[in-house]
Length: 181
Image 1 (cartoon, rainbow, N blue to C red):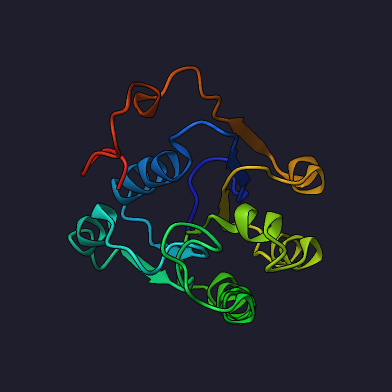
Image 2 (image 1 turned 135 degrees about the vertical axis):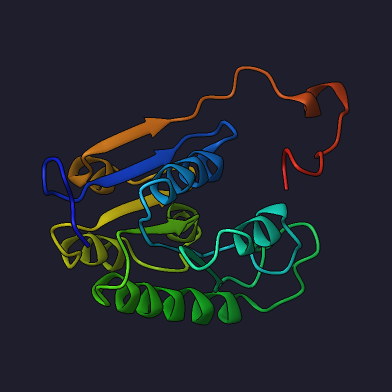
């Protein structure tokens, strides 16, 4: 893990109610691959549906590894799981993320939808703050998901808020393959 510029890893947060948080993190991932960096993506919520990024990321191997640790959306759409199962999976995802962060194998670790896991009460804010604190100095750590807590925003180096201005759903247009999933 060798940096050529400022020799410091950043904490980056993509949050807000607008679309594009995971997409922004994946864009950063693509840029990093251009420099032959290694990226680990840990998904905290997504898990039960098929997403285009799953097959797309396989094509970026061996530079990118993606781990779906969530059990799917919590308490909405087709979720039939007991909340305790989601809590258990999220806690295991935190432990797994800690291991990946400290492994020394990656230049970037993306914790996709971790802010949502906090907002849903699946994990505690202190667990996330500890992940940030334990990151090696050269590792870039990216946290995505709406409603990032102020404590995370305060400790981050870069925070971008996606704000919805207009959405096709308002016209009755459903989610589009390759755009939304």
